[in-house]
Image 1 (tube, rainbow, N blue to C red):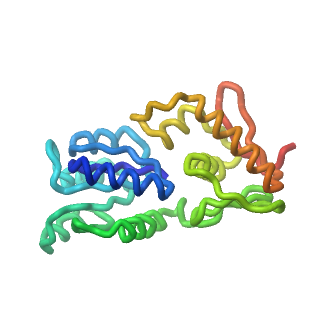
Image 2 (spheres, rainbow, N blue to C red):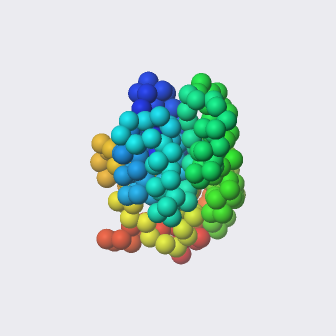
Length: 225
C-alpha cells in the first residue's frame, strides 16, 4: 500500500517514514503543500497523511483542491493545533481522520488501517488465488505445504498481483507503486523480487504461478498450466 506523507518537520517525517515502512507501507515523503498537491494529482496513492501547517500551501488547501479534482483517497490530517474549529474545518474539507501532535505511533497505524479498510478494494484481509492465500494482517503467504512471512516489498508486489489476477503489471508500474518516484533502486529489483516470490509460492506448495508476458509485465495465474 502506497502512502504520501506531507510533513515539513524533517525529523518527524524521517521517523514516520521508518515506522510506516516497517509496517508494510511504501512511502513517498514531501515537505511542503505544493509538492503534496503535485504528487497526489500525478501519482496513484492509497492514502495520504497531510500536516496542516506547511509552507507554500497548507494542508487544508491541498485537501480541498484534491477533493475538488475527484481524488477520493483516505486522508489523515496532522497538526500541532488542538482547537475544535481546526478539526471541524479539516473534517468538513474532506479529511477522513485527524490527529494532533504529539501522537502515539501505534494509534496512527491503527487509524490508518481503519481508514483504508473503508476502501472497498481493501476490505478483504485475506487474498486468495488458486490454493494460496496472502494475509494483509501479518504478511504471511500460506499454501497446502505450509506458511512463510514475506518481506515488505515481496508482500506489496504479491498483493498487487493477487488484486489483479490474470492481468499483467509492468515492471515500471511496480516501481512507481512500491518503490516510489524518488527511489534510487534499479528496475531489476522487480525481477529479483519476482524470482523470490516464485520460490516462496513453490515452497508453500502453491499451484499458482507468476508468469511473464514479454514486453508487458507479470501476471498471477491460479495454476501453473
